[in-house]
Length: 303
Image (tube, rainbow, N blue to C red):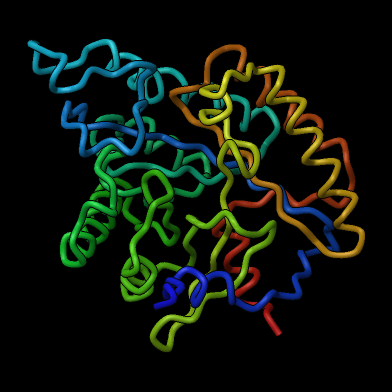
């Protein structure tokens, strides 16, 4: 019997290409995406999508006598304690707004940072409860409860809820998009299969897919660092990706996404962020947009 192709190809790969026109005749949209993440620091390996979660070499349950991995926790804590403020300073320097994927646990651990992100006009994006508890481990009901819990945590802290969602590890289930649409989300960002957004129909509603980037598909600092790249390599990659998309955008508008992980926002990485933003700002017809701005523009202006 021939294998059945799965729902990814039915839903995402077959999604219709949009004829996108950015506002004010812009050629290229640039989306600056921060990631403020928090881990439960569980030693249970089933919660780990790879051998490396958060820190550089986390303990496993079999290794440890101590129930807590302080080294890994310290590496992860850099994001909320130090790195996020560096990213915010660079964004403020160039008067740019970004979207921050934030675990609800990070909102609990680092409320002042999340409040500042919101107060500075950046978008707060739902990013599961904790980075190390993957959606693919949950039942449909558990996933629904987690999405609702995240909405409540952000609403209680900030007075408003997120309208965009990126799953922890970018791994969603066959239920995720349906559940997000039911809860009033406008966009979802786990896919990697395009350079521009596209619409996905779900139970009579529509949600916008805004493709993300990992170390394979594009500019993602944490993935590139873990593959042996340095901050200088990231700047070179940014310029290359920007140049190609800017050239292609003469015929069809494009979207460039730069992923900035707070736990990787070391001083050298901060210099990369600074120089990347400076480079992109030196070109005409570039629209720096939060992902919610991109979603609302497309949803309000589609043909």
